[in-house]
Length: 393
Ligand SMILES: Cc1cc2nc3c(=O)[nH]c(=O)nc-3n(C[C@H](O)[C@H](O)[C@H](O)COP(=O)(O)OP(=O)(O)OC[C@H]3O[C@@H](n4cnc5c(N)ncnc54)[C@H](O)[C@@H]3O)c2cc1C
Image 1: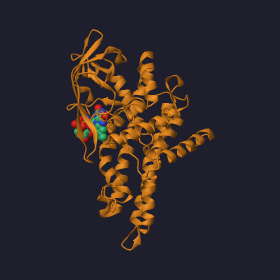
Image 2: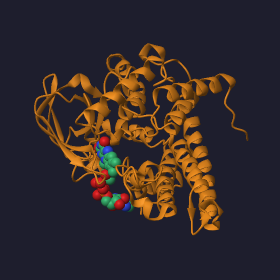
Image 3: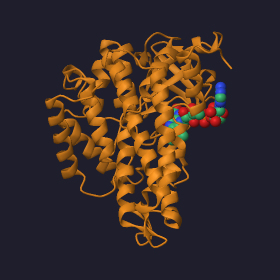
C-alpha cells in the first residue's frame, strides 16, 4: 500500500509551512496548556485568528459553518504541520471535539450559533467532564442539572478543567435523572462561563504553569437551548466526543520534530570524548524512536481514514491514543537520558539548558498525556472489550 497526498494537498502543505515560518519566527512556541501570561495568551489568540482567516483552522468543515469544504486529509495536513512547527493551538476543545460532535448531534440552530465562532477563532471552549470522584468512571458524575422552565439549574463541581479561566464557553456533562441507571441519566449541556454562580479556581501543574482549574457551580441557570441531543442521552454524545479527542492526529509530527532536534543535538554534541551519535546505544535508541514515530503516523492515518468515511473512530482512536502518549513519554525520557545532567535543566537557564530545555519540560508534561482524555489503562480496556470482544475484567 502506498500513502501519497494529491498535488493540491502538497501545495496546501507548502503554503502552511511558509505561513508558519513567517508567523512563528521564534525557536520555541507555546503549547496550549503552557500559555501562562496574558501576553502569551493574546499572541496565541491573534495567531489563531490569522490561521482561521485563511480557512486553515477547520478546512474540512462545510463553508456555511466557517470551513473550506475540504476533506479530512486536508485537516490531517493542517494538524501535522501545526504540530511539526509547534504552532500554538488555542481551542482544541472547540475545533477538535465540540465541532465534530455538534455536526453529528447538534440542532441546526446550535450549529449556526456555535460553529462559526469556533471556525474563526473568536471564542474558546473548555471541557467540563471530570469531577473529584468521577474521572475514569465518568458515568458516576454527580453535578446536577434540574429543569426549571426554559432553563436548567446546575449545581456541583468539575476538576482538571483545562483553560476554564480563559474560555468563554464550556460543554459539560451533568446528571439530569438521578434515579436512572448511571449512563442513562446524563445530559450534554452548553454553558456560558460568564453565568452568575460559576467560580473558577486555579490548579498549578508541576511545571509551575496554570492550565488546569476547578470549576464550581452554584445555582447556575443555563438555557435549555444549550442541551445537545436528547435529555438523559448525553452519555452517547459525550462518548462520541471522547473518540474525537483521542484521535491523536498530529502527535506523530510533534514526535518527529522532537526526534529531528534530538538527532541534530547528538550530531553536534559529544560525550566521553566521542560524538554522541557515534555511541551505539544512542544510535539504537534514536532508530527505535524513528521506527515508532513512523508507526504512530500510520495509526493516526487509520483514524483519519475512518473519519473521512463519516464514521466515528472508536477502538482505533484508543489504539492511537495509548501509542502516541506512551511514545511521547519514551521520546522525552530518551532525550533527557542522552543529555545527562543537562537533561534536568529548565528553559529559564539560558546558559545550561540544552535544546531550550524542551526535553526537560516534556519529560514532565508528557506524564499527563497518558491520563488526559482517559488513562492508558482505560484505553486498553476499550481495546480489549470493544476492539477484541474480550469479557470485562
Ligand atoms: C493534562 C490533563 C488535562 C486534563 N484536562 C481535562 C479537561 O479539560 N476537562 C476534564 O473534564 N478533565 C480533564 N482532565 C482529567 C482527566 O480526564 C482525568 O484525570 C482522567 O480521566 C483520569 O481520572 P482521575 O484523574 O479521576 O483518575 P482515576 O479515575 O481516579 O484513576 C486512578 C488510576 O486508576 C486507574 N483505573 C481507574 N479505573 C480503572 C479501570 N476500570 N481499569 C484499570 N485501571 C483503572 C487509572 O488508569 C489511573 O491509573 C485532564 C487531565 C490531565 C492530566
